[in-house]
Length: 306
Image (cartoon, rainbow, N blue to C red; front, side):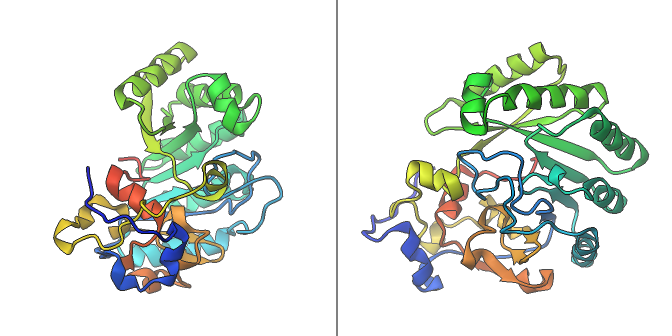
């Protein structure tokens, strides 16, 4: 997709100081998906491209409590939510995660997004038990940054690839076919990349690989690594007749952390991404003034499983 946008001498960071009217206004149609950042910004890894800059000992976003998750789920159900995503940080750093899933999966399908390193046999058995006893689906997504240890570990640290693959194999053997969420760099052929992951996962012992490709978002540590968004990476002054709101997941999703309600899981660290204290506060249109909004729009991507 090509956008006819005029180059602007200002940096992408200046967008927050401009009137919202300069940017497309994304309508909020309904709440299909709620993202629960149950792991806060706490993680067992310090990935060089983490858009939330999560890491060991980082409680910038505290862990969500089981009681708070119940409250948010109840709010979401009143708004007609259809599915829940549990993320972080690393959600398995939250000792209440399994209980949270047990509370929530009775209402709707659930997905856990993890780096895969903490998928022990005991945790996989607990997840399999939840899946088998529920009428709703339980999906586990494992993040990969390359089809081999050299490429993956360059982002996530030595040994993380082998441990993540081991965790995925445990999931597959327990009947939980994991989804590999892989990063796609600019210029890469998505079909070629998908074939590489498919081949690697089959060789590892996962008979039916499921693969989701996502672009890199220049937020958090990735912004520090690559320089972040430029002035050209913007939807500023996009003509109304050229704007298609159906391309963006934020028309039907919101994200919650222990610190409030946010427009989407990508912008939980952006002051302008916070929309209020309750989900009903966030049932409103949102001006697409961040560089990440540009990435979502031009790629047509969604963080959800679809």
